Image 1 (tube, rainbow, N blue to C red):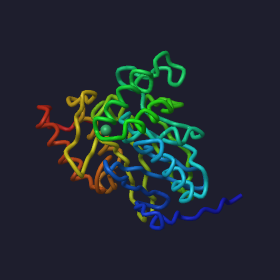
Image 2: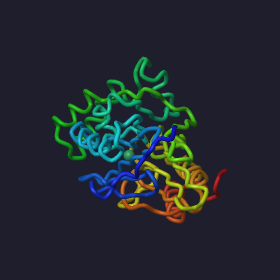
Image 3: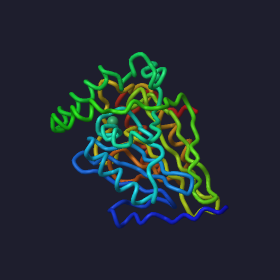
Image 4: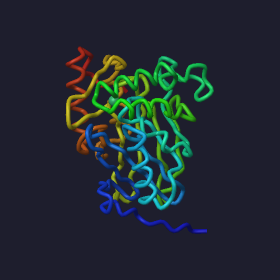
Amino acid sequence: MKVTWEEPRWDDLGWERLAAGVGRCRLPVWDCTVGLVTGPGGALLIDAGSSLAEGARLRLEAQKLAGRRVDFVALTHPHFDHVFGAAAFAGAHVLAAEGTDGAGAGGAGGATGGEFGRAGREALCADAVRNGLDVRAAEEAADTLVVPHRRIRADLTVDIELGDGPKVLLRTVGPGHTRNDLVVVVPGADDGDDPTVVFCGDLVEESGEPQAGPDAVPSHWPTALDRVLSLGGENALYVPGHGAVVDAAFVRAQRDTLATRFGVSREPVD
Ligand SMILES: [Zn+2]
């Protein structure tokens, strides 16, 4: 049976259309990107906003755009502005990268839950308050934070079925910005009508300098960006965690800048 599917009316809600069934919005305050990939087979949200209230708003918007509830939430990395809205999607299947340090090993059933466990939540809460989130909103989000249902070790393909098009690819490319960097790739159509779209999380930033906090692994960040570039190719749209959509040349330049900043070899690694 052929399932009918309509392109979301992105403009109506102030979202930016990137390709068929693929859009994103830039959230207020921290200019954090949230993406949505939707097709007859499902709807996948990329990152969840910076508070439970923001997550609840995003839930309504995503549902309106997709014409269905969000089935999957992919978290690009465990920073408050990307994950604190996740509890609003408790009914969805929440996916995140498994850390290179083993944080979160065992997923939801793990002994500590890694950065989503008690200590991790407190750290996220403190970081959110330091960055200007209201204390109560930060505590609420930390207390209700959803532990990802699945931790991805390397590759996962999610079946969203954009028309006859390809599926959505989730790939761990870190460490870099954090030990848990996940990118979401929506391959372009073969006929060339739609570009490949790569949601990069904070491995790429356009509206400011890439942020290397205490959980960053700067020595590996350039290599992570090489992987991002090889996943997307030369003609992809690269969606940064913060800022305007960029091209491969921008990502390559940011890779070189980071390599210089952190004293890493500039030679790309396959
Ligand atoms: Zn971040």
